[in-house]
Amino acid sequence: MVATGVETGLLSMELLVNTVQQLSMARDLESVMRIVRKVARELTSADGATFVLREDQFCFYADEDAISPLWKGSRFPINICVSGWAMLNKKPAIIEDIYNDPRVPVDAYRPTFVKSLLTVPIRTIDPIGSIGCYWANKRMPSAEEVSLLQALADITAVSIENIMVRNTLEEKVMERTRELAESLEREKMLSEKKSTFLSAASHEFRTPLSTILSSVSLAEQYKDEEQLDKRQKHFDRIKSAVKGLMDIQNEFLSVDQLEQGKVETTKEVFNIEKFLQEVAESLDGLRKAGQHFRIAHNGDNIVMLDKKILRNVIVNLLSNAIKYSNKDIVLNSSVSDHEIRIVVKDSGIGIPKEQQADVFGKYFRASNAREIKGTGLGLNIVKHYVDLLEGTIEFESEENVGTTFTIAIPDHLHKTEIPSSAL
Image 1: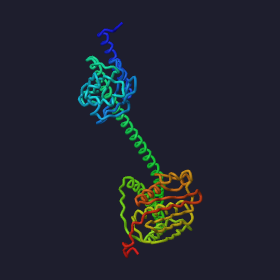
Image 2 (image 1 turned 90 degrees about the vertical axis):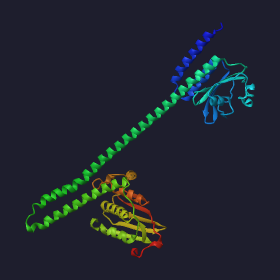
Image 3 (image 1 turned 135 degrees about the vertical axis):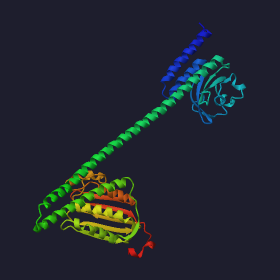
């Protein structure tokens, strides 16, 4: 039984409605093309259908459904193919005989089975592609077929735009989610840093504050003239404790300034051999009984770099060496090929091997040094300072044997610039 025109129209409308439902569930372009190419053939009883996308000045034959493969995956200049004509002119291209239509590049079609074709633009305003149907026998597509195929193209345009909007929204949601996760992670890290800081500050401030309070209390008891020596002893303890508190405060402030990039370098010319000797002598008061500095220098002794920053580096390393060792401390330096090398070596408690990767971390305290006073900031500050000097710092350590730090820093001095005052 042959279907009437009305029945055919109803079937076509039902097919379009079902297609709308299918396309509403599509989440990517590939799904859209797979649905549309099949429906295009059914609506027009075509022998093949193509789904073409516009890529600037080219037509990309992205997908097809045909009795024999034609141009899937091929690209043609937009101005020489029928799909391009439909996009550029923003209207259907209806061709009954491909060999008698100037819009058709006959040589491209000659090897194919195509005799007639119909191509409609996807979106009539600024088309983004086209849907083409073709037949193996010469026939004139009906006005209804043209209308149905254009309706399918319009539905397709909406589906593609919805996918683009959805993808954009998903990307924004993912980006916002990522930003939120990063923000939460930063907050978590900041909270952990604050907690660690408060713990370290509380621990380090406790001893000197206790010393100050107890010394003040005891000093008040020594009021007689013959007790002035005992009273002075407690005043000296108070001064020492206050200095300790100021040193701790300076360490916390130094880390903050370094992390905010507020520390600037100023290069000057100086005698590094004399400089290291002076730095070591300034720490004589910290040395333990029987502990000495063994200092040696090789090569040129006039250099150019930031003297203040280098002093902070050496003071930190020597102070640690004094603190964690009871034996002599080696301080060697050398200058050659515009590079300064400084070695600080102790024979102290060393750093446990499994903890060495964290040595330059903020608030790092080795497990074998927990009972020794310290903020865990010294080596972190040293690493920041060495970076500012454009240098490197390395170390070797063995538990209960000792630790050796080696610093390599560029020497910015041109020897012709040496002032007589530096000699």
